[in-house]
Image (cartoon, rainbow, N blue to C red; front, side, top):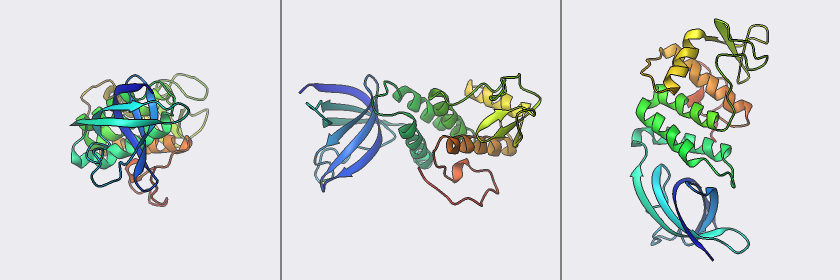
Length: 235
């Protein structure tokens, strides 16, 4: 069996038997993989201190002859987020787990870029920007300068309907002003933009509706203020 080493980010840990874990990683050169961490749930396992999400990891595993490989070693590097943002970071990992499937050759760089946006921009701007980056990487976003339904150039006032940007001829919904669209584009390009509270709420809501439209559940982080009629859900 071949032993492979790669940079990685832990997506999920699934209990297997009384002592082991099935671990899903995004890796630099092998995309998303699933490997068995045998004995990882034992108190004295060397994996216990290293198998943590939101850290740079260096992992080694042996390929299986017919099925899942076996984790051999994990070296934990730097933390990717401050403790204050760890809950939102886990939400982003849950999104990445849905967007990047086993066998996909990419995902690590895209997810780390999203986590960097959250770390740099904070909660108000960073969370929707990070989610936007993941959705963009997965090909689920259109161009904010055109209607996503008919392709017409964007009007001064557009609408967000069922997770899509539409013109007045194609539908109605939550208003999306030209100023908000420019602000989103500027934030995503790294510009220093200060969103109003109303625009930040709208961007969170747009992201939440888009996630729902693609079969993902949302937390309160992606709901507008006052939208309390829906129960809290988690990924």
